[in-house]
Length: 400
Ligand SMILES: Cc1cc2nc3c(=O)[nH]c(=O)nc-3n(C[C@H](O)[C@H](O)[C@H](O)COP(=O)(O)OP(=O)(O)OC[C@H]3O[C@@H](n4cnc5c(N)ncnc54)[C@H](O)[C@@H]3O)c2cc1C
Image (cartoon, rainbow, N blue to C red):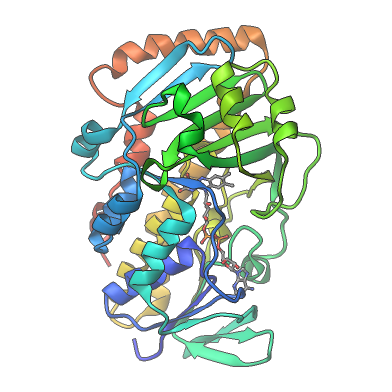
C-alpha cells in the first residue's frame, strides 16, 4: 500500500489492528480521541481463540506473566452453592484448543499491547469528526479540521461509533434490561474462602455473578449482572456502591456476599448491544470490533471478536495486492457470519444465565447436569465453536 491504513479508535480492537498491520508490514496511522491509552480497572477473560492470535503476535510470554490460568469453569446455584456444571480449562483446554485460556487485568493487557506497539504512528487527542473517500483513497477529518489521507479507514470507535452512524445511518444501541457490576478486591482479603483458580459462575433468579483471579493471583475480580429497569449510558466510569450490590444479591450464598463485601473498587454500568448490520463496508471504509457488532458480555467475547477481526483484516489488506476495496470485502465475508453468531449466542445466554421462573430454573439445571455426562469426554459444543475458531484457518478457507 502506498498510503497508510487509517484506524479510528485505540481500544483493544484498534490497537490489535495496528499490531497486526505492522506484523505484515502495512503502514498505518492510529487516531484516538483520549489523551492516552485507557482501560478500566477490571478483569477480562482471554479465551483460546484470541490467545492463538496474541501468541502469533509474540505476546504469549508477556501475557502469561500477568495472567492467571484457570483450572476450569464451574456454574453454581446461587443459594445452595451446588455445582451444576463443570468444564475443564487450564492445561487440558490448552492441549485441546492449541492455545491457553487466561484471566487478566484489562489495564495490564493494555500495557502489554501498547508496549509492543510503541508510540510511533499513534495520535492522541484526535477525535474523528467524519470520514470520506473517492476512487483514489480515503480520509478522515478530525475535530480540529485537519484532514488525514490513506488507502482505507477502519472505524474501530466502539459501541457508540460515529463512523457507523455516518456510513449506515443512526441506530441506537439496544438496552438489554440489565446492569453489570464490576468489582475488584485484594486476594488476601478473602483468603479465608480458600478460592481456587477457577471461573466461578453463580446463576440465580434474575441475576448472575462470576468471579476469578487476575494480576497473577493478587486480585480477585467479579462481574455481576442483574435486571434493572433504569437504563444509563454504557460506560466504564460509572461507579456503584458496595451496599447497593449487597442489596442486589441479598440471600445469595455466603461466598458471593463475602466477595462483594470485600470489594474495594466497584463500577456499575448498563448493558447494551446492537442489531447486526446488513454490511460493515462502504468501499474503502469499514467497521471493526464493537463498532460493527457490539455484544452482551455473557460469553466474554467482545474483545476477542475485535481481535479476531483485526487479525483477519490485516491479513486481507496485506494479501490484496494493493486492492483495498476487495480486501475489505474479503474481510467482511470471512468475519461477519462468525461475529454475528457470537453476538446472537451472547444474547441467547441472557435468558439462560438470569432466568427467574423457578420451574424453568429447575429444568435448566437438570438439563445442564444431564449434559455434563456428555462433556466428561470433551468440551460443550458452544465452547468448541467459540474457542476452537482459528482465524488463520478461516483466512485459508477463503483465499484472496
Ligand atoms: C461487563 C463487560 C465485561 C466484558 N468482558 C469481556 C471479556 O471477558 N472478554 C472479552 O473478550 N470481552 C469482554 N467484554 C467486551 C469488550 O470489553 C469489548 O467488546 C471491547 O473492549 C471492544 O473493543 P473495541 O476496540 O471494539 O471498542 P472500545 O474498547 O470501545 O474502543 C473504542 C475506542 O475508540 C475511541 N473513539 C470513539 N470515538 C472516537 C472518535 N470519534 N475519534 C477517535 N477515537 C474515538 C474510544 O475513545 C475508544 O478508545 C466485556 C464487556 C463488558 C461490558
